[in-house]
Length: 230
Image (cartoon, rainbow, N blue to C red; front, side, top):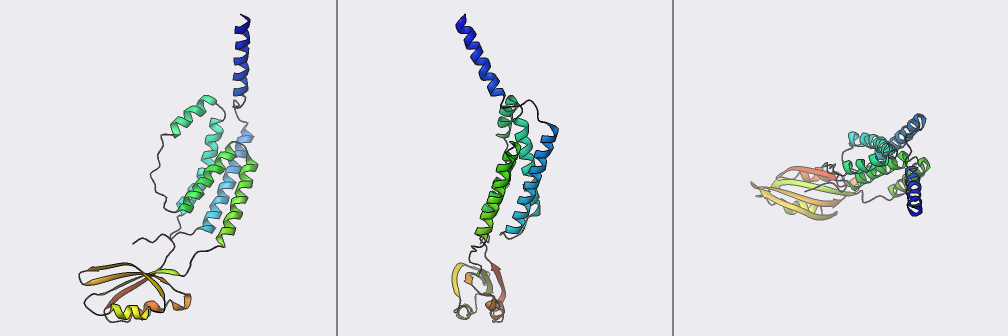
């Protein structure tokens, strides 16, 4: 009988100490503070993304979603932290959610993870963790942003008549530039030549020199930023 009583007491102590990790409810002012901090950090991520964007086309809707995601994740963390049963159910419910929108830019994926991480930290009321992490990541991005890649790399696409001996003249005019063949397609007597070329700002008139050749239909020059696909 004594063993049962001590065992019950141990279970009660364990249960009470475990439930202390999950308060019954959050004060309204604390909830408002949590949402405000999440919004401010999300807004900071919004501004950093707009400043550090390196893709081809800036997606404003994706950037707005970073702010909303930070707030929503903090709400989820606040909700599951008030009830242990609800937290287990929420984990099971979220595990079946699948997002099929492809994120092609690895930097966009990093910003998504940054917004989720900040939302988790704020929702758990570790405000200082989210704030310190925000400024630390911002400093890392500013430092790495100065280490730029090859900004003189371009993709040159030339369409010309395959029946005319114009290709040799094209290559001769490009002899002073560092080039590499990406693809060569011939269709209906029209050749599409795609070259990877290194140019400086004072050499961008190469498109005019090539378009003046007899047999050349059009010349396209695109700066390569890691997202151009043939």
